[in-house]
Image 1: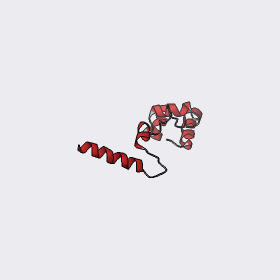
Image 2: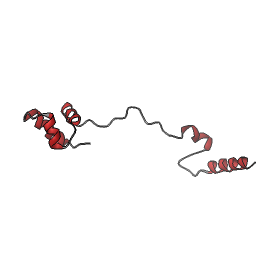
Image 3: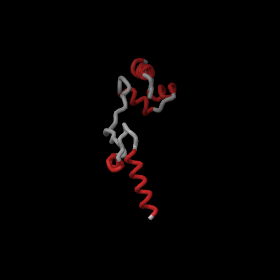
Image 4: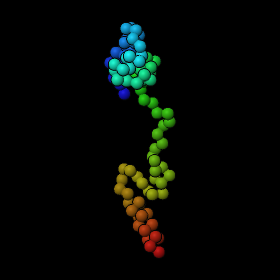
Length: 89
């Protein structure tokens, strides 16, 4: 992400000084597409998620495994011991 200062310098070079986008891109070491986007927005647009985060990732397994993130995983240990016993037989 570029600093606001760079946005201002690029916008001034193109809009006030009348220089071409290509020349400004070359001077600042940016792509022409980036310069075009900088001219489109006065301030850098912030990152925004398209969809909310699905939490927890292990959602379907939290209940059966007995995971309570605030305490010890005693239920998980008992579950795992039962699982290991059934795998041996």
